[in-house]
Image 1: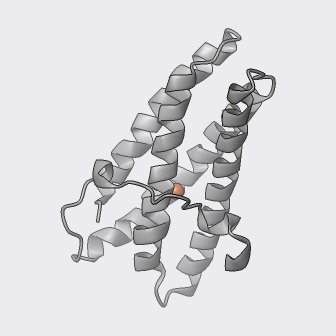
Image 2 (image 1 turned 135 degrees about the vertical axis):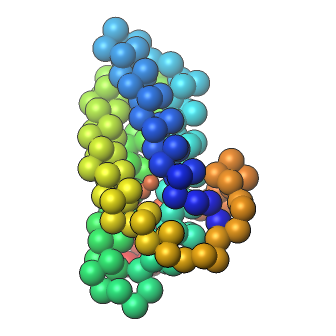
Length: 153
Ligand SMILES: [Fe+2]
Ligand SMILES: [Fe+2]
């Protein structure tokens, strides 16, 4: 499993790429390759959190379970917005992409802060994590975040 500093580093990396993309977009352009890097990183990050981190910190803790539900809802919003931007890029009509990317950016600010302050510290108390790094993870084919699965609600 990844450790908290890997995850925080991933937050910073995506933040700086998003800043870069927002600058490009403010000139009325888009960088599809940079966007796909951001999208792939975010989805992999969400996958790791929902499949490995969140289950390990929420067990038997009601307040934490509620917090995790909120964080997973935000993952779902981010995921949907990423898909919308990708769709716009694929049909070469990026009318709403700037708005969507701004939304992703603003959700992430509070989201990442909450994870770093309230969720990741609990990982430190568990010592069962092995040495896997973030870049070792690949999202399994067809995996989507928990709150976008109808049957999972
Ligand atoms: Fe997250
Ligand atoms: Fe995160």
